[in-house]
Length: 552
Image (cartoon, rainbow, N blue to C red; front, side, top):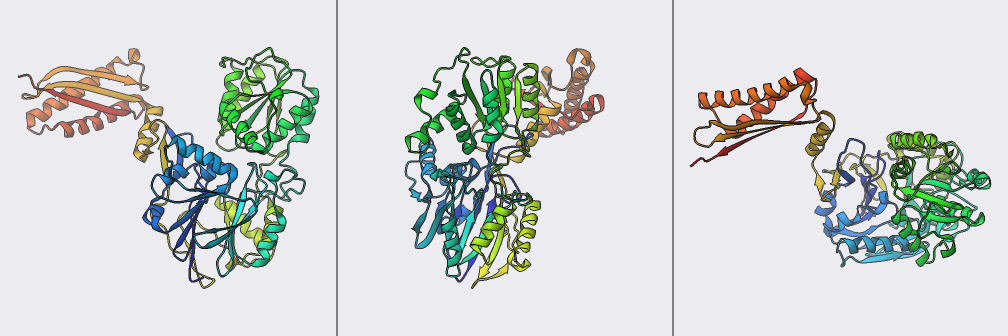
């Protein structure tokens, strides 16, 4: 290996947007291309994707894009990337099916997509890549090992060590992982988000034992709120429904389509006799899955609880299982939902993070992979900086020395030459968030978000006035419209004074010979803003419109 460079364009010290670049000499391998969901104040933002500038500038060196599993934080930014570069995609079977479907919707038919085996070896542009199965919330999850002459670069994210896993689509191949370790691993990129949790994640990732008594005791219907991408937990509940001979209704059409995809391709399926195609409130012995991305699951259940759903109405015999513990960013929606459920007098069973864990590696899972792989260098990924430090301390406890542990930020490059780390000082330019809008699916500039936040909190005042084009005499208005700032009936004097300020400023500029439409509008914006702040304590958006009409 003459040179190896490793860096992330997203996914470090943040939740989502995972994208790693592994450069082996002149070849760039992109591992995952995910998105993340917007925060509360990012109004009108559908999703956030990595900045692809570096990849676009070096597109001729991209050997392939490798996707490790079908979660949105791993693959849903892929169409945005493939619109800008011509690259071949490599992914496990289920991922390829979803990728083809999404690219078809985007009318992108010419992308070459290759199916990776869960266990095996492929050659990508002359470089050997080994794949191995991982146990995760999504079926068909894999880890990869990219070969170099100094050992493999292994990427293994979002996994648990579960020796009781019988279903192939969810199994980890521990023997294959150990074999890769014996051949020699130069660097391991391993998830660190649960590094501070003691023991193995398994069996706390399973909820069957926790909810089985609920199925035993439930007198009426069972509702389940669930994050839509936790397919492993969904599978557990489907098996319980079969055991207790309850019919199943999937509230969300997207989930119905996913279940059909699983069934059509030989994964698990829900037999027709167990599925409710047309829902009716008269059906009693059933389980209703209310799923969605993040807070959507809670919002949808909340609508049902307040009788805003056109099909479903709660009754006192119903039981609601909150099967997805509340995570950061969903607290308000979950709280509102739970409050309304109590008003409906239904039985509520709430699984919290002390009872169940998501399928991420805890300290012993992480230590086991470090022991099996025996990498020369360890790079913690997926988590906050605090998680990276916890993972680093954990690796110290199993024999790593500080010079073999690397903690990076997005855009920070670890450069190796002839098998030795020579620098972590280089930074990739243009690394950050690209915000995609809900309406037109286009990039949103940061100043637009600031304007939207301003509108949501302090409102807007629109000032319209018409002038004679030649004389600049006022011939119409001023017309003042206020939205979300003041109650007009109680503050008519504010509106009148804004009108007076507008007329006086225009007359003054005309009199002094300094009138310019753009300049006067900017001055109006500042003066009206100061006046409204003094009178109301608010800082609304001010939109002056001066229309000049040619009277000839």
